[in-house]
Amino acid sequence: MTGRSFLIGMAIGILVGIYAAPLVARQGFVFGDHLQAASPLNGLVESDLDAAIQPSDETAKGELFRLSNWDISTHGAGSTVTVKRCISVGKDSIACELLARLGWVDGEKLVEAVFEGKPSTWRMVAARAR
Image 1 (tube, rainbow, N blue to C red):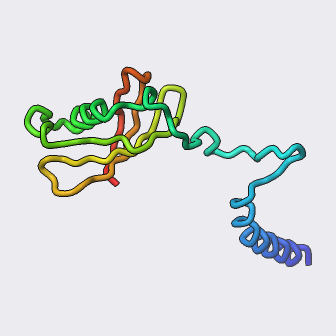
Image 2 (image 1 turned 180 degrees about the horizontal axis):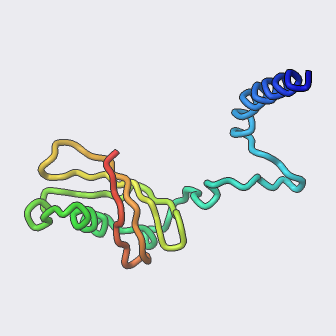
């Protein structure tokens, strides 16, 4: 009888968890003085970084060409890279969404990139097309 009660309790708990999960995800937990529960995304708050903090369009273009091993002297003139938005992902790191118009590719490509360093010396360490 104990085994059956345990299984029924587990089934009810799973059903309540499935029902409650979307509600908790939308509203979060509230503890006492309205403190939000810790979230792994707390450090990834999107904000409008100052233009002085995020990399310039020219820096992003140069770093994208450097990281991809493309010849900027050959294809750089017909290409543009625009920094759309950035978020801070650590003490010395930011993740940015770039819009690349490459001279040898038709249309625009959306690129996600991670930069490390300081505001005047950003260095792209990873990028992927989206």
